[in-house]
Length: 361
Picture 1: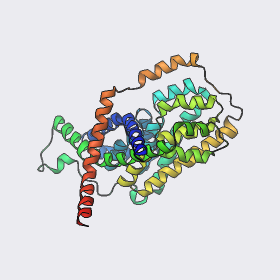
Picture 2: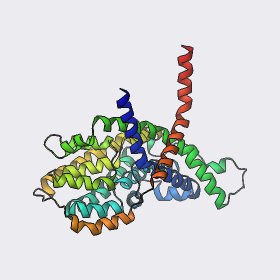
Picture 3: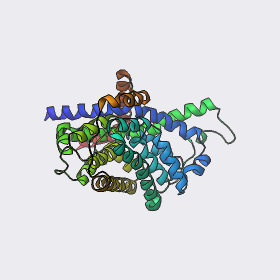
């Protein structure tokens, strides 16, 4: 039992180590967005149901090399700064799936056929999720009772902050408000993800991903939705599976659902936006990824021949590596400790209350 718990904690910390730097960067960006971008401007850009707003949100997300955990503070920050649910979900879907490095690696490892389908899907699926969010968002279409930025609430009428004060106040909000709230759910989600990885090791997943007849595309879509998968890091893994016989559609389905969502993100989305949002996001993502995989296997690439030429891929890999930010080990550990500290700070009042109840009983 203790050995299993140790493995779960180590697996969870390993996952957190891969995402913590992007989480901290996202806290900073969310804080700056909260204080430097006026609500009126953001509302004009993303505070509506226009198709153009979804396109802007999707394209913006496609240019940011941030994982599905790191996009949580940015997406929630956009939502609570005035963006409608549709653009928020489009941004949160596109950001982890597609970025310049992932596209280059996909063309280098998976070949032009799969990579082109992957690229098109990486744009279309966020748009579909955004449309569903705008159409079905209900009370969660926009954040209720948007408050003024933190610094304005503390000042007398007529007092204005300079740029430096806005930046400092935004960073305070990014960590003390957004960081504390998100880290609590991220820590819980990481532990659940560590439990899944411990119970379902990589060898198990590789075995059944390599045998598409054993687990259906629907099962792979659901499995990818709760796992933590980095699109950039897992493209070589997916390429190896395809080269060993996995169906191309199955690889795309797993990469789409795995990269676009995971338990920490789903839990944070549920707690900070609402259950309707999680349902829209999860259902549309899984169904659309399943459909893309099915169409790829049956109609788009029925006689697919695996593409994996390491010598021909080296130039593309070098280009992709130049676009990937590889944080040094000490920085990853420092950021992981920061996320854990923020999470414990948020969870401590509940833990303290439970301990008091247990002592009284």
